Image (tube, rainbow, N blue to C red):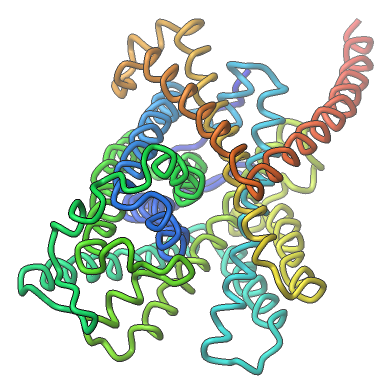
Length: 474
């Protein structure tokens, strides 16, 4: 059953998270979660795989995840005692769901955070080529730990400005692309900027349906973190106002930050000229005559990776806090510092992120490992999104009164939950087509086997603790 009511004001008794995140923090955290590093660096590969049809890929994924977020929003607001999706999954599906959800979400962000830390170290080589790669990785983890230990409001401020940098970069790219189309820009290779580039070279589906489907395998990773706003529920000052606003703006964000950005890129640079291994953002600004394009975009991608790692540190510590409160993690993870921060979970998550620096020292070439890691992360995030939908279906079945009273209902709730679940199953099938993503798909079940074994120990310990209490009551 849900825990005691969370205080609605910033003051607290030392046992609850403080509500110090203002509306602007929540909005920008939601935007930052919807714009991943995959958009900046991975869009070149997705364009080469799917051609102009990649626009439809991002639209479809974005539409599905919008309904997942609406389901999450209705559940969180149906009972303000829910601090995150751990709480409603455990309440509606059973304690096992909270255990699996919390630890899987923690592992999702640790895996993603390790990739981000390694990426940050690689990006710093642009300015400091002689520095050992493990050094900036360690420095990054230390900086993120110190920032998050101070206060949740400082996390909100840092994430606000990280997200702002990404927004400015994408808006600048869209504006530059539209200007180049309007002025009929011609590249040194003789290619003219025009919207007709989207359909003149082999049509919108130049590689057929298989090329279109291949785009889903990589594009889905660009959306991981979109649910991050759900982990801020316990620390939002006015969740009934801020959460709906953040979730409702997701479609606009996807249109502006994904669709318009990709249209601008392919209108200026025909899709066949996009190099998979390079960032198309850099290429567009270079064509526009910005001499510092490589440095500017390197800075943007660096802050994007730092933003993702910062979000990961924040969310993993809150997941561990929720798990510890339920007895599903060591009790020290539920301890709050004087500033109301779960410092035990923060320290543990940051130690795990240091595995990224260790990997760089042991395995210098991580290109194949990156594909494996990001695919594992995408699969695990889809598991989290699936449990959110299953929790929503259980809520509709067992709490019809709460749904009827809700002021933030998910549109076509039951039907769209089924559509989204079918879509995730479809993406899993697509991941089996390529060798590298298939390896990740085959390796991921090992995590759930490990969780199942761990849960048996946790349940026995919980039952053993409950037995003496029952005997004492007699």
